[in-house]
Amino acid sequence: MASEIAEIPAVFTNLLDTESQFTALANLLKNSEIKSVLVPARGTSDNAAHFLKYLIETQLGLPVGLTSPSSVTIYRAKLNFENTLIVAISQSGQSTDLVEYAAAAKTAGAKLISITNDEKSPLAKLADHHLPLMAGVELAVAATKSYAAQLLASVMLVSAWSSKLTNYKSVVDAATELLANSSVLSDAVAKCDRANEIVVLGRGFSYPNAREAALKIQETSKISVQGLSIADYMHGPISALTDKSQVLLFVPNGIPLESLKGDLEKIRAKSPSIFWFGSGELALPNEVVIPGAKCENEVFSSVVDSIILQTFALEFARKNGLDPDSPEGLSKVTFTR
Image 1 (cartoon, rainbow, N blue to C red):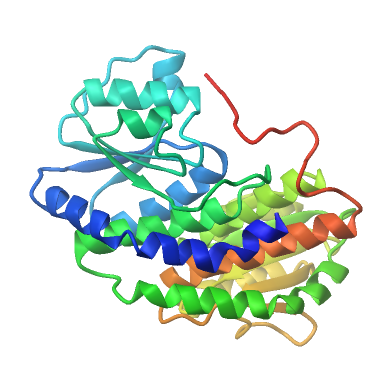
Image 2: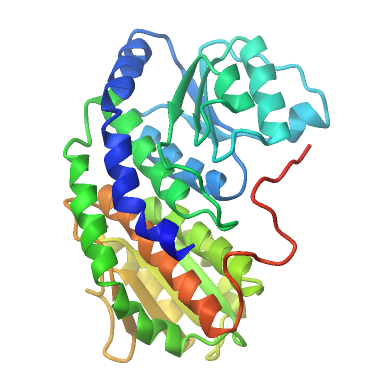
């Protein structure tokens, strides 16, 4: 897991070298009559799907939904997907339910793009267009470099399609810098207690990272962790917050901070321990700050900040005497129906 996190700047470089395939695909998309987008994914890839959803909705104004593969694999629904784009995201490209759903969607008239780390996978072969992640073989059960690559691939696809979000090549230098300064996580890891509740919150483009951080901690430290939108958290779950709780806030540089202040005041009223990942501009002196990437906008910062969530989960598991590379009860590829 540690060595694969360290590869992320190189993975970004490899993916950026394939920029022409995104441009060619975007030209086809611009000339099509796509009215809506659906994204099938599972696990870590599902968190990347949330990121792609935000990108397409904010940059292109198209409606985007995350699919329910069970509608096909269990309930055998008949789909009608004319003028629909399916973007299937999967590290392995082998998950049975994703492949079956994608095949049904394609038969129903959808255009199918796959984003995987294996060009020979069933999902890659099924797609009308496949976008390889260029991450190389990923051995650790907890996905790291492939998730970071999925975020960047999402940016590259939407940037080519919308002609916005340029200058994303800056993520390579930002990732290199963040890895070089990863020692700042030590204080956060030391102060975070596995015995007390951990809640991970984000909003907008940081929401996928909040979900992924919760998943990574659950996978590697064998505890239950909530990963939620701050907005959803305020609609009920905050009632369980206590002075023993630990709140991990993902606030990338570039996010509109004003949108957080009201909710932050309500969270602080419960006196939890607060850890900031990204920007510490709103942090109080007694709160822990883990600086994130300082990119030109929150989209790019969120892509690079995937590194700090992964490194935190890695070091937190080590602190707790667990092996983050081989979590009990998990395997690299999960086959669901």
